[in-house]
Amino acid sequence: MNPNEDRAQIEALFRNLVRAHAEHDADAIVEAYAEDAIVYSLAPPLGRRGRDREGVAGWLQSWEGPVLLDARDTELEMSGELAFMSGLSRMRGHQAGQDRDIWYRSTVCLRKQEGRWFIVCDHASVPFYMDGSWRAAVDLEP
Image (cartoon, rainbow, N blue to C red; front, side, top):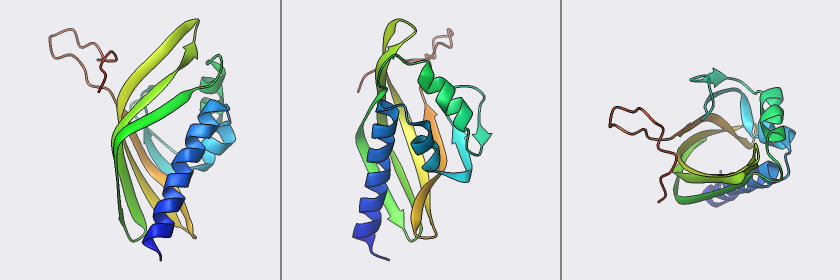
């Protein structure tokens, strides 16, 4: 096991996800996940297990043009066949006739299986305002 090679493979996986979102490639997005992955996405329900190609494809179709992803303040930690990445993510594009631009928190856990890295847990979240309104704080920027 070569840590530099593993890091390069994980970074390539995330670059491929950025490209796949921009190109609306649902298959490439889903293939980054293990078959039994746990996903806590921004969309309901609270969580799910497994790949959801139809859901991803339907969501991508709701965007007019590319879905642009960026990240900052990311940290990648690796130990053997497990790794996790955490940081701030940005998603932007045009959806439902409106420009969308949102920052959110991301933690992604990966496992190396049969020589390839897969996402086994994906957790995205936004904070909420603690002023009694319970509104999601989607207007925050780093």
